[in-house]
Amino acid sequence: MSASKHWIERGLTCVAKTYGRYPLVAASGEGCWLTDVDGKKYLDFLAGVAVNSLGHCHPKVVAALQEQAGKLLHCSNFYHIPQQIELAELLCRHSFGDRVFFCNSGAEANEAAMKLVRKHSAEKHGVNRFEVITALASFHGRTLGTISATGQEKVRAGFAPMVPGFKYVPFGNIQALRTAINPNTCAIMLEPVQGEGGVNVPPAGYLQAVRELCDEKGLLLVFDEVQVGCGRTGSLFAYQHDNVEPDIMTLAKALAGGPPIGAMIAREQYAETLGPGTHGSTFGGNPLMAAAGLAAMRVLIEDGVLDNCVTMGDYLRQQLETLKEKYDFIIEVRGRGLILGMELSIDGGEMVKTALERGLLINCTVGKVLRFLPPLTVSRDEIDQMLDILDGILIEYREKNND
Ligand SMILES: *Cc1c(COP(=O)(O)O)cnc(C)c1O
Image (cartoon, rainbow, N blue to C red; front, side, top):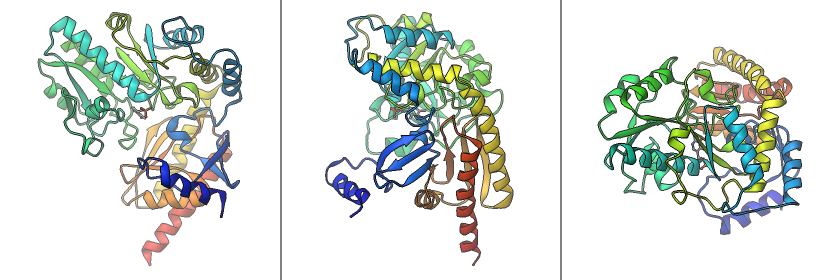
């Protein structure tokens, strides 16, 4: 029996069934390549769903972890943690924000944001003003609070009752947003580009119009940049493309280049709402993850990764557009930087399985949008290798369906 088969069978007996897993058993990774326990190599255009943005095991992140691991692994937030302070300074210096709350995941970062907007609104406007408007096809996490915020029925199914106080509007439609606002609305929470919902980029001017609406109505604007922050779109944060600043932003996924971390960044006037005892996390901002975050963010900012993301993003997008001209079942190519989606008129699930067999990791969201999330350090040659495999799969699909 192969090592892969051995592990898959063992996992079936004891690991929770929360994921529909593909038959790949991960062993090691380097750059854009993942190797399984039988030594098969995969070209990784999923990158841990936008986590491994610097490639697998970036040497500077690994070195920071190794060094910190020998000094101090954990220290309570009852005390001061230099690595956490340095990472907070860096994030504030490079964003609109003034203060950072650290946690361990995207859902936790969004929970912190939602607690902040509720408390701020209650203190300023009274306890009834707690509604948050989010978008249809959004994704904000898997906790009870964040599935309540998520505008996708399938994520909420079976877990009623939801946390009250959320309303969903079509993404990209400013009139729908204006209509949904009522006296109990306290905030609007959006992904600047929707990831899980199918790689949806809003129309030009939308985020600016949302910002103006928030200012007009006295609402807080929260950007969930868990997936599209930290360089994924070619700027450090996605909001920087649109010339708007939120009041609160959440980060996680790529923030530490692989290890788990989350962050909620807020302007001073709102951050002060969460005073001592109002919120917390045992592990949030621990020395180990903060050291990794600091190393990863420095690589992102100083080592030309953003420039590579822009150049390779343009190249990959052009090449995907070329495929669109070739196959009539490709409806649209969209995205920004290195989060790109290819919408098909057919189911993409089988293509993802075939790609895996041929040594390529991609993913499919909402059934028919192939999503490409390679490390931001990807090379032109690696993109060409990916396109060769993809084109082969698309040709076979067309041939099979023309017979
Ligand atoms: C992945 C994701 C989350 C949830 O992050 P977890 O770390 O899985 O809790 C939240 N928001 C967006 C936009 C995401 O892509």
